[in-house]
Image (cartoon, rainbow, N blue to C red):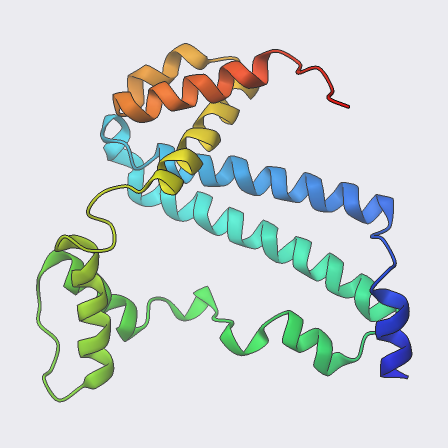
Length: 195
């Protein structure tokens, strides 16, 4: 039965209503992600804690909704529960209701340089080191091209949708604002279809 399911499912396109809903939800996530980035900028620092958490959790919840709709469709069409659980990656799921874990606190401590974790706790040491890697000439010392492009795309898309491209200069670093304006410019005019 499982083989039959795999053989028939692999070539079945997503039903159009489900596809449209997934596209809608992903668009909503993108807008929330852009707002997370927006609230990291210094000009609205007074509200960054509240708004970055709200928009990040909105994005997460909306992606969860998309996942559950797709999962419900897969279940409806006969996917085995163990296969569905593996696709949903349920083993790595964490509840926000439990709050930050020790690993999260130690990672932030590593980013900020204090307090040091207990020397006998290897997991704490690993999290602390990971946090240090972000700040000491490591993982996030300089924005890579992909990250800059992603930020520019999110900001440019939002600016075009809100018809507020000029505002980009007021809250973004100049190099990101320039890229975001280019993205918004491309989105402003319909592109001719290529054969």
